[in-house]
Image (tube, rainbow, N blue to C red; front, top):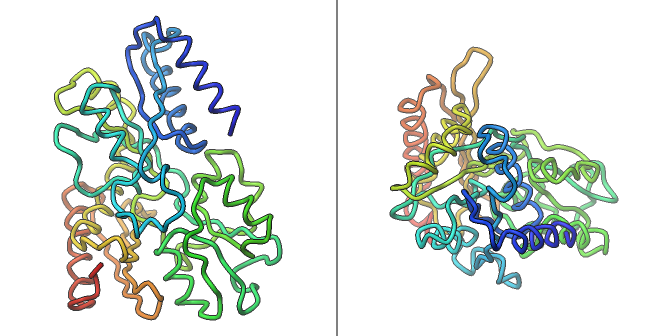
Amino acid sequence: MGIIKASVAVEQQTQKNITALIRIGTRGSPLALAQAYETRDKLMATHSELAEEGAIQIVIIKTTGDKIQSQPLADIGGKGLFTKEIDEALINGEIDIAVHSMKDVPTYLPEKTILPCNLPREDVRDAFISLSAASLAELPAGSTVGTASLRRKSQLLHKYASLNVLENFRGNVQTRLRKLNEGVVQATLLALAGLKRLNMTEHVTSILSIDEMLPAVAQGAIGIACRSNDDTMANYIASLNHEETRLAVACERAFLLTLDGSCRTPIAGYAYKDDDGNCIFKGLVASPDGIRVLETSRKGLYAHEDMVMMGKDAGKELLSQAGPGFFGC
């Protein structure tokens, strides 16, 4: 972690007297930086002028979610906690593009910004990590599982009611693994995508299937935003767009937007292309205690309009099933 931060600090220092063509805004966590570097490397490989030394600068921005580590995310707002300050820097012209984990991006983009690009999606599944059990099913009754995700907590308790969940299991991947090693919890669940991007898959005990743990909306997807009036940046990042990922994310986010769940509503959704080229969508909402879990699925054409409609329709169905009060904060 220290090495990555130091390298960025050096990069920023040496570029003070160089006018960068693109300033990339990102959080400072090792995973966020890995995603920013992935974006930088793709831009350099695609556009020769960006391969010149100093053409691209990484700018670290501390977000509310990074600053407040002592409270559960749901207690401090839940939405936009890892994007707000980066978006403000973008709108104010302090950076040229913003790199986000799409699962952190609110369903409404800030005014004066667009998000025309998703990089190719990484594995969407969750990883089970434990020093004492090979799988969730093998954890003894009363074992404590650490997670900061209500989505994971609700699905976990629905299937394994005898487990305890430590809710405020916050921090970056390295911090959570350290807490696991110190015995604070007997197991934790992390996004496999993040572990792959950090080259840390050796820590994975087992991988949870989609049926066992439906992922967060847009899990494993990176989004790149720019100002809506900046055609140069829009063209740069549009050249990196992976359309299959963009459409899947649009479907899932339409589902989330329709539900408009509060910060305390566990929601999961996943859209993907099947072997016949169709879109399969699976959606889920749950009560935080895992007692009520409502699920639905859709199948349709792998095309933007069809997929957005599928997401909306699935959301409306679960809203109807849930009834009044289910989504209250």
